[in-house]
Image (tube, rainbow, N blue to C red; front, top):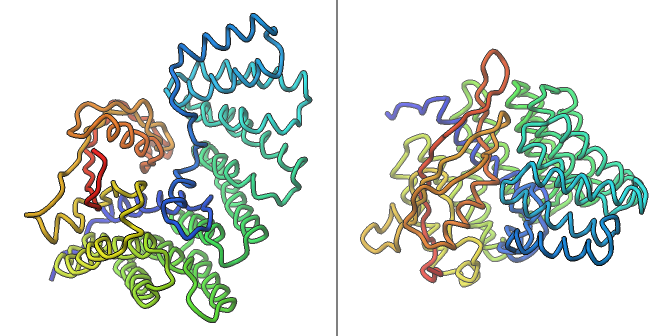
Length: 424
């Protein structure tokens, strides 16, 4: 009889996996898993194409010299410069340039011009990196109000702003408003995409996890069950978002006292549904269903069963041509220490890739100033690992009931090539 894993280990696993759910909130339904992953790399807007900051500054200075410093073109140039500075971690410079761009737009185009949404969103994200969460919430709220005026109160464009506001309000201890915003996001997703959509299920999962984390176990589990009944009522056959809903319920069960071990049941069912509907389910989603179940088996130290499931996942990678073509999943991050390649066939593995990171953590668990101390991968791999790390979240550390910042944290991340054709 194996000893049960510690609660700390269970919650660490749940928080890692909840990142995957968060990434699906803005999912674009598609037959291509790669397209879905590319469209949902977390709540951050996609960075601009890598450009040398000195070049951007020179171009901006030349533009200002030719047309003046208070034109819409100058504002757009400041936005481009500020967003790139944000992604490079130059938060004070990013703040000043984004605020200046916003003032120019307000003066020339009015306070509700739709072009303000992008700089306000980046300004809010930048404030979060600086730990200024009240200012961040205000920026997201302004961006959300602009979408209300331009696209109506029920528009779907405001959902990422809502989740970004939730991040800051959580740090500020505004639990009631966090709950209201989670519920609002679910309603917006249902209105725009329907009960059975990927977007709605992802938002339901986040609401359910939030309820479970704060001890509202019955409402959380009831939410998952009622959502499942609605999905099944609308579909006589298989519905792919049900796989993600089952994953959400499994993670919520990790927070319920005496029911942690039951978290295996929804994941086992998800894998079974994916296997039975292999002809219609997206191959990437099928792969993730297997890996999620195997990972949870490893959490509960049922290694022999996990090996068999990992073997299924590896065989799926070998037989599904659609998976081999997806560059976005060449490096599948190991949510635990194992991978199908490691466990099944250690003698014929592609090379491991690892990176040793040093970073600070904000009070809400966001990595800040990540640095690669060492790695055995290429420059492209280091950049990709760093980008993945930026959208990761960690469970906050609380002292006297308040979340605390942490400095000079180090973490050794191991990645495994799932596919044989890897760009090195």
